[in-house]
View: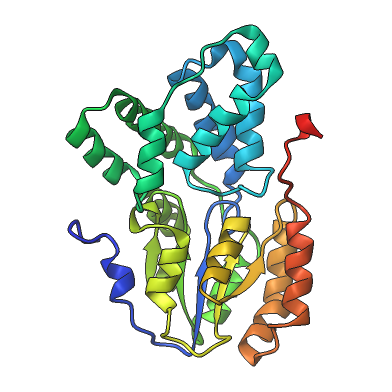
Length: 297
């Protein structure tokens, strides 16, 4: 990956097959969402942001944002801000008088930075010496360290490998993810499936919408580009580019992959995916992830 332009692998990507498939990783290809957030992200949020007095509520907020809401799968930095905002709005937290993090510089960075990853954050820290950005980087690096230490030996969902092997002769494939590239490469290579993907695009290469646009925009015929994901952000990235979407339903991942392998893939390759079939799948998927947290319902 070019240090000068981290998006170079996407910009330089050229089709070699008739079809294109983008695949999300955490929670979609691998059953890693729960362990990463519950064992790595959330303990480090509580520890590094001094949320011990309201740890119960911090955990509930972080699990809702990252796992059980329409924001599932979003980048870690805007997700962190959402956790802080949900805590600030919760009466139980207000009554405890806990001082929550004030992070205006982080908010500004999230609003203005297009490549929300540690490399860009490190550059911002070196440029500004901002204490909040420094703390955010320390937290983010601690999360990465915890993931590297804990998350391994988790195989891809059943029917993912079989789907990749069946698609390989007919479709170009890339990984489209908000996870750091180093973790993605480690996980995909550990299980010998990285070989099926021309590019493994993580957060350092920009947002998922950019990944798809740079790699596949105007390079394939209409109806021949598909994004596979488990989160509304994956759907949004596909729709922003006018591409098709196949949902891997949270909690029903194995069934989703078997259905793709047995049915959806064939429809996509035969041009019979768009329309009523896709609409039904997306409607079912969108109904699974709420916008309102359970403590407000």
